[in-house]
Length: 460
Ligand code: ADP
Image 1 (cartoon, helix red, strand yellow):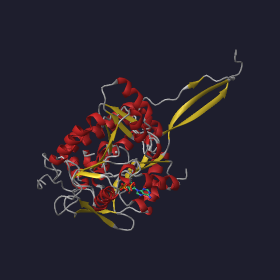
Image 2 (spheres, protein in one colour):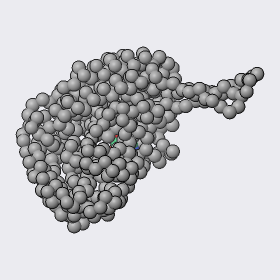
Image 3 (cartoon, rainbow, N blue to C red):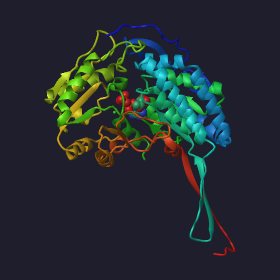
Image 4 (tube, rainbow, N blue to C red):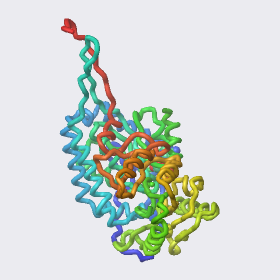
């Protein structure tokens, strides 16, 4: 494991951001945000609980009902969103360092990818802000009917820790474009960049109360967001279990990023003809993978985000061994401090094994040999999840058949992790519903109003 290098950021924002100001929590309580490289405290953050969510929702409600944001022409909202995006670009190094120190993400990856693409997500939706419109309906009776697209209101965003920046902007950007106001609850593991974004939003001139950021825990602050009577829509990305809880409350994917990716290629099906060579090359690659301080440019894999995730991944590895899968490489921790895990590869997996069924969220890959395409499709679909899948083939017929047969929201053919602001992304089955990115996502934050009026003396 390579050692630590400098680049640590200064922590400027540790309080809740409500109605345009950084404030203490109602209870005055704080919680620790931990550096996963060392297990040590980075800073103490004001802890938002139900009371703070109430205050934040009131501010967002007022800003929606009486403030300028939903009433501004789309082009004016777009200007402020563009300014916000420019400020992100201007602060790119500091922001990348915050995600690296808080989430254990690779600093250079954040600087080259996560942060600039988040600014571009804002720009994409800024471009859509003045193109939101309803339709004139051709109705069968003597009525003039049309639809209006109106912002849905106050939105609660619950953000996970694996992509603290990307997922913040995937949610906040279309929501801003639509004219909504919002309460954002970042993950307790990764509150630092979200608070910095709140500061930049204010600098950009986004009116007070439009974006409120309340760090806190899932069971308290998160639950208060998902069950709040005065929040009109909740947007959540996180585990399936939490998603279920949120649905009740609201009544109504390997090695990239340490495997902490909802679209990680955790199950890999390889045809028998190339299996042995594939396995050999993969294991060689895993063994030379560089693990260490995420600020070091040579490093390819940083620590898991926190102790809980670290232990969870290790317990899945033990499960895999007990269930009889063959451990080809990895399986152990690295170093004697922080939350580092070796890239781990299992072979001889069976579809019903826990490591094949659960979302491990760590650097653990399960390999399976197959003979026929039908067999591979059947195994691929034999999961409760359906967010994304990748196919590697030179045969166009196979690519077409497999892409239509796999029940997943995104199919990558001869590529992987290919995202775009303009490509809708979301899951089938237990991987959720609704889409982020694309104009599809804008529609999550809009509601349709039908307006109908009689046309007297109509010639038809
Ligand atoms: P993980 O289990 O992988 O840490 P979670 O789904 O628990 O992922 O967390 C994702 C986000 O959901 C975090 O912001 C977390 O605080 C929040 N969260 C967790 N539990 C709840 C809950 N019961 N209600 C609302 N939000 C929650």
